[in-house]
Image (tube, rainbow, N blue to C red; front, side, top):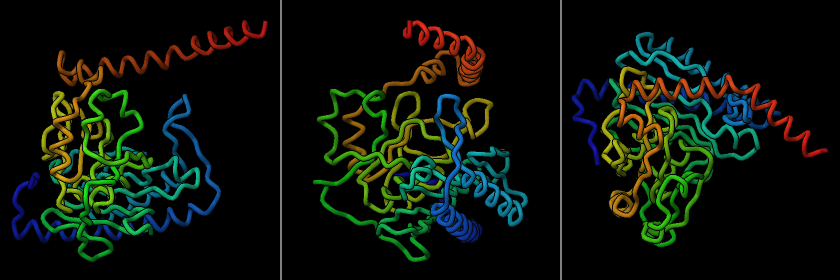
Length: 330
């Protein structure tokens, strides 16, 4: 289990202030989401293929958090899922204003506000409002580096139980990404995918999920939850060059920003992770393979060029689809 480095007395006071501010903001943002959850929801999609939903609630809550962070900590950076931001400051607030947007839009009460505060890439404070906490009700899970896991201001001791019958969180694309022939050797437990990475990390931190696996999450999905798991006594591993390694800090790939951070994440009970990593092998994605060959900056340029080419070819693809549909009607 990584320690994220020692904490001095001065740093302890600083991160305690950051934790308190993150808790207050997470609670305010969570109350706003609960208010909007009961009202009609308007949804649009970031992708032309109807993926990555975003609601007015996502944008309104992020604007609220961005405004409050800048007012309270004007020298700090802010990186949000919807509006981006400057990741160059020593202290960086990494925010997902509504993790689990599809759940929220469809009336499923499993969603979160995730607020992680990084210092030079190292998580030092975290607050996670979750509509589905460890006792089934809304709460704020929070932590600071070296301070332990808390729920709504009180120290929280994760539940421990027998591994038999425990639940584990895995991504929807688990069987495509990992070698299926090894599944029978994985640690025991029924698999779940709840539609909110941040909420799942909260449940791992509290011991409700034995461990969780997430394929290529964004930094705002995990910046808070990874610290919560660590302070709850769990371990956090990330992939690097096709191997599992203990998480220490977020590092920008090449000369890019922290918003481009990528890597699979495995978090949970240390014993379960040790068993899991022995049994599970990673299939590197095409982008990861390309990064090994040409480096992260060149791989990013190729990836960006491919996305632009795909978008530019949209009229041709739409025309081809129209011709196929017309031919079927003849």
